Structure formats: C-alpha cells, structure tokens
Length: 487
Image (cartoon, rainbow, N blue to C red; front, top):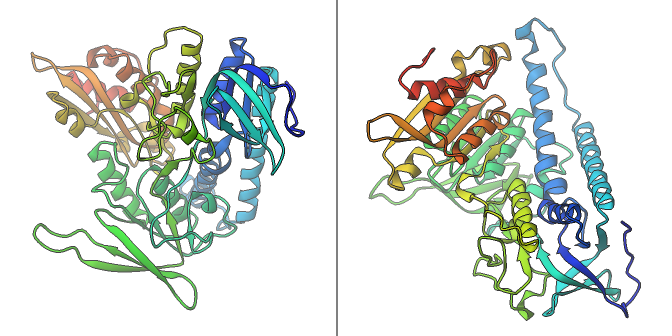
C-alpha cells in the first residue's frame, strides 16, 4: 500500500472494489476485512486514522482511567503492608503516556492497512451520485475515486446543550477532558451514561469534587436497575454525588472563576420541580454524540438521512442508494467501537455475497470502565418483563469472593436474568449484568451464554477456575438451579 498524494484534479479516476469514507474503527475495520478478502480498497480520512475511538474516546479515556486505578492502588498499598509516601500526581506525565499509546496504536493501524494493500487518501470524501468519491485536501486539490461499492463511516461528534457553549476550559466535552493539563477542583458532569460515569470516576479518583447530573431516573441507562443502584451507592462512598431525574437549564460564570450551574431537581408527584444551583470550577457535558454526515454531500444523492441525522440503513447496513453502505456512529445503532467492527464485517460479507447474519443489537456487550466497573449484555429484569417474559433472577455479591478479597476490591455484584420455564425452573439466559472488579474482562462468558441462547443448567454445569473473580458468575448460575454452593 502507498499513501496516494492528491495533486490537483485527477484526469484518470481510480476504480476500487470498495471505497471507505472514514478511518475510525468501523471504517478501517471494513477496509482491513475487505483487504483480507482480496478486494481492492481505498480509505479516505480527513483527520487521523483511528477516529474518535483512538484519539478522543475509548483509548485515551481508558488510559487515564488506568492512571486513576494506579493512584488508588498506591493510595491503598498500606493495607497490604507496603508502606509508601503519599502519592503525588504529575498529570503531564499521565498525558504523555496516554499520547504515546495513542500514537503507537495509530502507527499500528497504518501498518495493518499497508499490509492489506489499502490505499489511504488524506482529505474529505464527498459521495457522488455514481458511487464516485471526490477527495478534497485543501482548498483546490481534488481527486476522484470510483467504487463498485462505497461504505460511509464518518463517525460522530459530541452533543452540546443550549446554554452550555463549550470553551474548552469552563465548559468541556469529552474532547477537552482528555486533553486536560490539570484536574479541576469541583466538577459538574452533565450526563450519567457510560462516558459521564467514566469521567466522573476518573476525576474523583484524581482529587476532584464531582457531581453527576442525570436527566433519566438512573445512571447507565440499559443496565439492570439493581446494578445502577449499586453503582450510585458505590459512587456515594467515594464522594461522587449522583443526582438523577434533573435537567440543567443553564449556568452563570463567576467573576473569580468557575460557574454556577442551574438545574431542576426531581419533584414529588403533584409538585412542581424545584430549581437548584451548583457552584463548580468546570462543567463536563457528556450527553451523547450525534452522527456526523455533514461533509459527505448526501443531500445530492439517494442516501436517506433521518430527522436525527442518522443515515438510514437496513439490517445489513445497506443505505437507500444501491451499492452504498453505512456503519458505525453514522447509523442509529449502539455507538460502540466493537459494534462498528461487527457492522463493517456484515457489510463487507454482504458485498462479497456471503449471506451474513445481521448484528444482534439488543444483545451486544457493554463495558463501562468507571470504578467499580460495569458490564452487561442482554435484557435487564425490567426490560425482560416488559417484553412479556416470565422472569427469574439471581444475584451474588463480590464481598464473599476470595479473589475479590485478595485484590482488595469487593464492591459489586453479578445479576443473571433468565426465562422461567413451565415447570418453574430457570431456563434460557436473557441477560447478564455485572458491577465490580474487572467485570469488563469477565463479561465474555455471559455474552456467549446470552447469544447462544444457553440455559441456566447448561452454563451452571461448566467448571469455573478457583480462585477467580469469574467464579461469581458460575455461582449465580448455580443458585438459579436451586443448588448453589456458597450463596
């Protein structure tokens, strides 16, 4: 592969089997998978390969969360008989390490694309009516690519709120938080979803006084209510104040720095909502991301975009324009890098005529790297009941798990939701919801159980290694059979 420079208008357009617009996980994933299948592939990226996930999302966020984890470990070392000086944080070193990891992974992506002979074009790609892609790099330099198929993977950008215009210091989104050179003293995190909870956890560990303001009745929408309540309690123990059922209305900057955030507090039935204020040094707006089709030129094509800005696709990621696919954050599916990878594979398989199975979105795995970690797949107990299932559930806490005691991290639980069979026993596994130490690494067997439609008795019969954190998953399954060992 060679990076192809743009040097004015091309007189001889280059034709590819597949042209991908967007170099994030969904885009470069599609390019790599298609390249592995022997397709001639071009990838167009206007910024940096790796997209939001690598540069302003998953990777830098988890690296800084690991910095917070190291801080906790050193702070608690005396409990193991390891006496240390009080830790001091040099956040510039943390940021430097984060950037080295990001840069190394970007270099790795470039190498993978090169080995798959993917032609990378730097610039902004714009879709034409004939599946051509005009690549503009600068004001006048344009090259035209033609694809038998085109895949759109332009990604997303953070959503902002009215009255909270971001300036990068007083009001921030995820982009600015990940570039901080020091930790603010008092922070309001607006939004208690996965990203908001991760930032709240990280900032609290590193010394900030954090308040989470969430509009929904619970933090981490989608996870089982028992897990959300447990996380709220765990946050409270660490000094993170979680306020749900409230909506922010604006903020007023203070003369000596900081700002006062105004929000409506949850009201009792029949009462009007109360207005409250919170004085902080910085505000982190973390209310989600919107699709970013802005530069694709879709208004001039047959590709349909819905009212939310999402590209409309079918279950195989085909748009309303023949030969054009869309994947990742650009379509209205879970905004997760691993979902983008899965969608990319489905799209390329469909192009190759391999009759792929669609992504099973309700059962994709979710991993949130706050402390304690949260991970889940499948239906919550409430969602299962709403779907009409007769449900049986079981939950066990890490407080009795030997490995959790050894690593000094016993906060959390495993909850399993199953369908009740006609004889009253627990049948098919519908959902696995976890909070606790390293549950993001433990979810794999729960994900397999849900997606293979395994029964409780089938999973309970499997041998769990001892002593491990994953034993708690097996113990919870065994309890559902009516014959648990330790619970």
